[in-house]
Image (cartoon, rainbow, N blue to C red):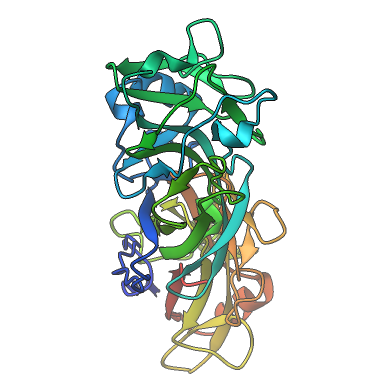
Length: 413
């Protein structure tokens, strides 16, 4: 009996996908930022299954505090496409009005949105803004010291924002950056002197992402977008005096899922010989009829993706199992086939896979998935002819029963 490969779907195959992403052009008035992330299973870290952010960083994290950003789990972008300019002076008022000062309110709460795969499968991603900064330009006088050394200032911001220790300054400009906790409200500074004009020359932010479990996603490219508004009373609200040059910032997401599904059968393992327990000696020497004929064929499997198993038979009789056939007499007997998968692989009900029957209609093997990346772990195909069929095979003259069986591991679930 032979096991055949179907390389288009399984054995020895490595499954991955790279699909070109086509983005619809947005109106010129909307600033955009491309966000990319990829999942590839790592044989050296099989328990770490998450997307890696591949968006090029810029600004504070790579330029000023890479270790701290890594510890905080944040990722920074600096763009010169967005800037804010004051529409009048920042006054000194008898009762401070934060909306007429240097005020910052950003979308620091988690916001969810959908990405859709090239096969139409949805997944949910979450994003929040976790830091804010820029380079501000100010006339001299009053220069960058207008806010005073003793009051909350650009280095040590007012609560709920958190300082990073990052600043660089000249007399008329300063680079600054604050951490914004989840769900924070307004962080605002009021100066003891009038500020005649203020200009935020660039726009810098840090963000966090919550991505889906890639092991539950199919191979492919997942795309989607999330837009934030800018301006007074909007998602990015810098008060009533600081007005942006653009009113919309759109993030375009591309999550690339590159799964592995690989099955390795040892040399000669695709030719299966069924034998009684202990071989044929008991039958030949003591005429003791075997209870069954069987063979457990081991193989190794690597998988980070969902898959199903199917069965194709050279011989069948309309039942749900394959047959092996004696070509001279035409006699045929059923061949029972089952599979045992390694720890870490479960079925649709979350149960381990132990001697699960492989049937022609695929019942019971419609979906298997790894709880974590399984890398070259041993598994077993169980082949067996039962007692009644053995009795049929052993009547009359010597016979040879053969048949081709194709076992398919298919990641297209």
